[in-house]
Length: 153
Image (cartoon, rainbow, N blue to C red; front, side, top):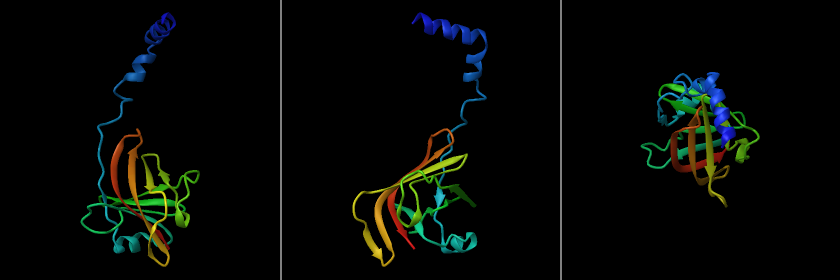
């Protein structure tokens, strides 16, 4: 205990504690995001064709995926902007070359799918129950939803 107090006193005297707790280093106010459904027009516009996975949240107005993932990136439409996050290739492998995790300097996402056999929804596609969690660069949840993970070519 005496060592802890001595170290803290030394840090305070040297100004180190002030820098560690200053408002400049505190994260900004949390801003939730609302990923939009990616339509076929968006897929064409941004050339998102190919094998991978999509996530469709429960209760969405339209059945469009809010995230598409492949072997290189995850794509998410936030407002009018297409946000792309590089694949974390050391994360769990998903079908069709996708991965479980993707991250950029500002956002990261984790796609989870239920264990077990998928529901076959076509000759080259399969669907699982799953969830999507998106975090900001301070590791705070800015979007979370349960839904379906559909992978295919």
